[in-house]
Image 1 (cartoon, rainbow, N blue to C red):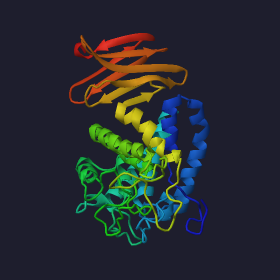
Image 2 (image 1 turned 30 degrees about the horizontal axis):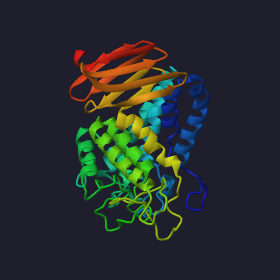
Image 3 (image 1 turned 90 degrees about the horizontal axis):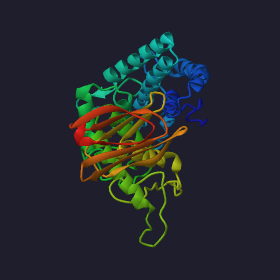
Image 4 (image 1 turned 45 degrees about the vertical axis):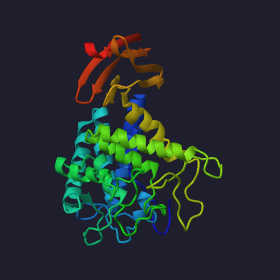
Length: 372
């Protein structure tokens, strides 16, 4: 939105990432061809308007929507710069889809350039975290949820990712009862009531962190955190002690059940807030709790689970194809039953146990896990 704080109205540059994900749900290559020139103009405008001599981007902190987060002196926000890396990487992937090698190479080079600068300038080995920078390039001391955007951009190497992900299990920083607060719990500015972006748990940021964990094959941690997050959302739907009806909220408390608060904004958090909560309920349930990853153009369904359980999904719509995948235990052992209107390739990945890819014909079929 245009404002005195953000005169250009810049937001998080994630359009190419969104288009890439939409493509794998719709297989609509024509749409990619149509939007690509607009996405290129957008990236060129950001470069011309916000890129600085050091190769990083200087934008207002409010571009990330974290209005009252303690980032007062931020000049180079880590979340915006990581989002630019994410977008550049997916612009390259869209170029590959269009078989445009020049386009793909141009944005791949851009991605590695931003990645190198974020790693060299924003990483702090002492804190094991990515920090915002002030105008002189100094690290701001606060650790905010913005520091996890580099996971989704696949920026940290193995050592850095291990240190960064450790914060998600650490109750004194981001491993609070309801994962993950917008501000580290060891900050003097952290508030257990949430106080806007000083500790509240925002479903849309949880989605980002969990998708970042996926990039580093942290499937079990991603699943565990998804389940914990969904538990707190479910608790928020229950009637409270005064028998008032619950709801889906924009933000939640970090250390116990309930919605967050913000003393200066009595209308916070917004209710019926499906824009953010839809991502961290429907999407996380399908992709991280059940563990299904689907690509329509590749005709693939990957099922990644830590252990076999009685679960699955029925009548999931893939364009004009309904699929059902269910696991059950019978007297013959664990069995996966499948039904589809069209052929697709199914990969079952039981972590550290079995991994197998099989073509699944149209109609009904089943497989015994012990026979794989």
